[in-house]
Image (cartoon, rainbow, N blue to C red; front, side):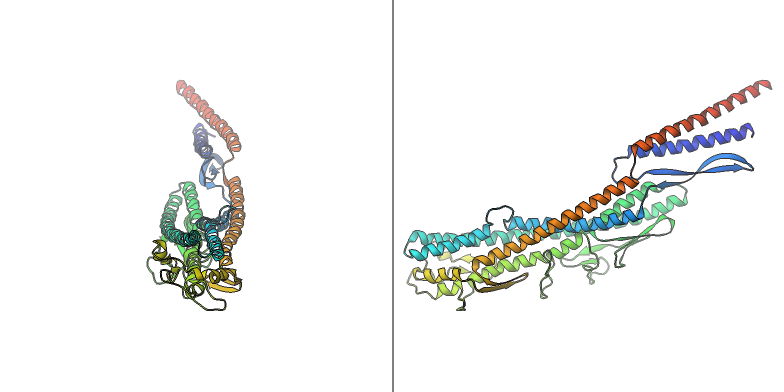
Amino acid sequence: MSLFSSLSVALSGLQAATTQISLVANNISNATTEGYTTKTAATASVTLGNEGGGVRITGYRRATDTALFNALTDATSDASYRSAQEDYLQQVETILDCTDTSDPALASAMSEFASAWKELSAQPEDSVLQQQVIDAASNLVAQISNASSKIEALDRQITDDINTTITGLNSDLVNIADLNAKISQALMSGQSSSDLEDQRDTLIQEVAAVMNVTVMERANGQIALYTPGGYMLVEGTTARSFTYNGTDVTTTTNTALSLNDVLTGGSLEAMVDFRADGSPAAASTSGTGEVIRKLRDQLDLIVEAFTTSSAGPPETFAYAYANATGTAGEATYIFSGADRFTFEVNAALIDGSETIKTASATAVCETFDVSTRTFSADGLNVSNASYESLVTNILSCFQQAYSNIRSLSETASDQKDFLQESYANKTGVNVDAETVKLTILQNSYAASAHVMAVIQKMFDILEGLV
């Protein structure tokens, strides 16, 4: 082998070692960067005729595991779906004051209202006990009004969350399509696309948190993103764009077609289902479906229970009071209103211009003791119930739904964390291994540099002999 050939071999070794050292150093510096995968360079021998011509970099690779990545993608969708459900149901628990061991405010208000009437029935002429009934009635109205206002605020929050999520989704899909183009361009020019692929994988996980997705490989390093049902999200450099009209998720190009049953499995489905109103169809039977609709209708049911006059059997609160004998100056009704927003105590009782019918106390008190009532609202069908058990049934249904979802959310989160750690262990940077590799490459670099120095010295000697 000539000195020139030897110099070429040593130079190629020096260049290959330099590239690999740079990759290893980059691996070590990004060891704690989320989503970063270990990068390596592929090498091949170079031959010049029948002689070795050194080594060259033939391409770049990153550590990956397709099966594990797909499993993580599915787990991310499920964990996000359950987490969103848990978050909103927890807010419902707060609204209904079911977050501690004490009696929820609405249940207490109902119980205090019933107790006030029972005390009044023992001493109907007692003005203090009459005022106690009025105060208890006002408290019941206040609790329903307070819960109603918070439910509407939660509904607005979920709507904002859906719009924010869709804005982020649209951005992620566009960025994935853009990275497809950049990756393809990098590969065609012989450059590394590994960092770009890491960025794309991170975006895929962000999309997976919003809905279930299936990743398909395409030519030139590109990927396609579809829902499990086959609906295209990204294909090459083309990305879908979505919007929300307050009830349905649609594409921006076809706002007439609902995709609520297509974009499923992540936080978006959880949010849309939580507030979706499929009226006049029956409400969802799921504990996490159409919760806003159920809350509204069940609070309206409580109002209806106290404002509807019916002789029964069993007779209602409003009927018992209205049909009791009254005298001048006594109010003809306690409550008015058609729903949770208009529900109120008789203003004349509040300002004291009228008093409670003293003759009504016994009959009204008896209506609270009846436990054979039937109540029906969206998401609720109760029989053999009293006014007090109606409220406890409403509260317990949402408490049970939250308890069930919290358990499912914990399981889904644990599964995601396990797969995330497994994927990181499989594809992430092992600093110890990279440090050993760095030492070997530095020795290789030093050897190539030494060979070049020796050849240079030999050239100097030959030049001196001329």
